[in-house]
Length: 165
Image: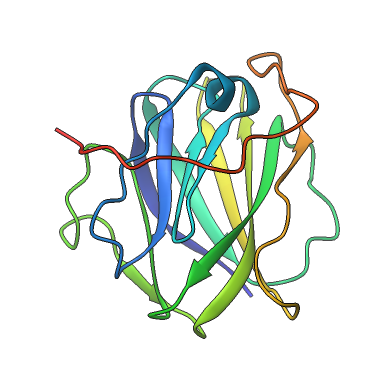
C-alpha cells in the first residue's frame, strides 16, 4: 500500500519520523551524523534532506521495497513505534495542525527514507515502513548516497535529543 500523505515542509536540511509518544523529537546533529545523513534514537529518526529547505511531495508506503526507482538518497534505519501512532513532519511544522498521525501496528520497523530531486529542484520523498519480525533493533544502512553525504565505514547509531525552537 502506497499513498500520498501530503506536502511536507522541511527545513534545516532535515525531517523527522517518530512515535507520537516521544515528547522530544528534535535530534542533535554531530558532524558524523551529517556525513551519514541521519540521526537515530529508539523512537525518533531525523533524516537529512537533499536540499536545505523546501517542500517535498511525501508518500508513505508499507509494501516491501522492490526497487528504489532512481532515488538520489536512500537510508534505512530501525524505529520503535510502541504507541502505533506515527508522525512525519518538518522541524518548523506544528504537531497536529499540519502533521497527521498515521496508525500502524505497534512494534519495531525498518524505515527507509528515499529522496529524489527533479529538474525543477522539487523533492519527492517516500518513507517506507517494513515491520521487523526479528527481535528489535538492527543496524542502519545508507543504501544510496548522494554527493552531499560522506558515509563513514561505521555508522553512528546513537543520537541525543535537542529542544527545537
